[in-house]
Length: 499
Ligand SMILES: Nc1ncnc2c1ncn2[C@@H]1O[C@H](COP(=O)(O)OP(=O)(O)OP(=O)(O)O)[C@@H](O)[C@H]1O
Ligand SMILES: [Mg+2]
Image (tube, rainbow, N blue to C red):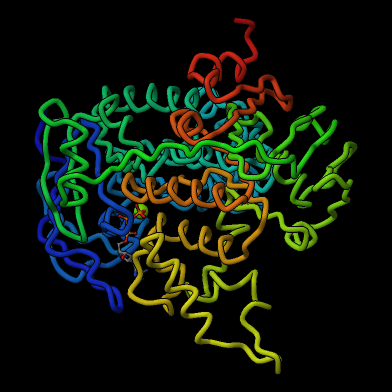
């Protein structure tokens, strides 16, 4: 391997109430894929945001190709050849895919107008090189989270950078898209690009990374060659404790009554004649590839999208759910995969977000809010979900990605719904906290709650579902009992191949 392209030394960063980086080091070489790992809130995003000029460091030095540099804004970073795919998607919802990719760099035609044709053409070339089938003229707000993530990746690639930082690029992707992304990453590496790869999906690290740096609580712990270290050793360094990842097994299901039945549900090309039922105390997994229609089914049940036809039967009675508000009233909760848009008010604090959809629980008989109860309730979830925050009054936008996610979870648990739909419940959650969430799902099922769990992680689906529905192109293509739900069987149904 060659000399370092980036060297960060003694980087220190404080936020109000948080010492986010403590004299942290990081070094990247040209032509390597370098994993950066650590628990939620360890400081991974923060140190990379300092490298790309999003945040200003308090102390420390950054060398780029051997020269000391002072990167004070993102444009400067881009000029040097450093780009980043942020963990939180940053696209403009009402612009097209092409406009988003080339925003601020629109190609000029005859000096005044930007040339949309050129823009679209360039986008098409870029996307097809990634084997992504999205029209450049599509408005971003009509894309799924996974598609948006692909657009973010395309945007970062369009800069032709020498250093590319990927902050959880695969969080929203399914296996086949991840394979495509890995091919792209390997091509970039072969061209000499230095890649920083942040991920909580530990099994990816061995597949794609050359070295790994571990951070813990804002501190630099170590850097190792991937070949010299096991995943267990990495995890141990991340958490600083010996034994920790507890393998949570699914509790036995009791044969309770059916609480939800869905018959011949139809909506557009993503929901076609969908039928299934859900029992009390059951965890029903929903597997499928990107665009299979799982989220769309959830949105129909939750009243976020209108049905074209079909029936939803709740506790034996047909219901018409016209809005999410009605769904919640009927005891159905939906933890959306798009948390930024549907899950959180980023400008409010942790306590308010957790209490938000259950305000009536926190009002006394005179109609006044009970702030104490609100704080107590949030404390309960900060503790049980180990949300890393200086206090309940911290604004949610200041939490790390994984911790924001846990706040959404707290919000729906406060609501105490009988049926909970979790769309990618562990996306962006670190390995340790994952087992906490699995325990929680188990407990909820034991208490008689019914859970639909949409997940792109096969391992999670297999481990945590009593029964698995598989979707492909809007249709249910398989229903697998627990003992039948193997990786092969699920993939066969998900790609709709006959075995
Ligand atoms: N803008 C901010 N204001 C205040 N505190 C912040 C801000 N950004 C990050 N922090 C805090 O800095 C710490 C490190 O956060 P960071 O986002 O770097 O974590 P991370 O390692 O990327 O975690 P995750 O895996 O959850 O994405 C956290 O305690 C977080 O709450
Ligand atoms: Mg982060």
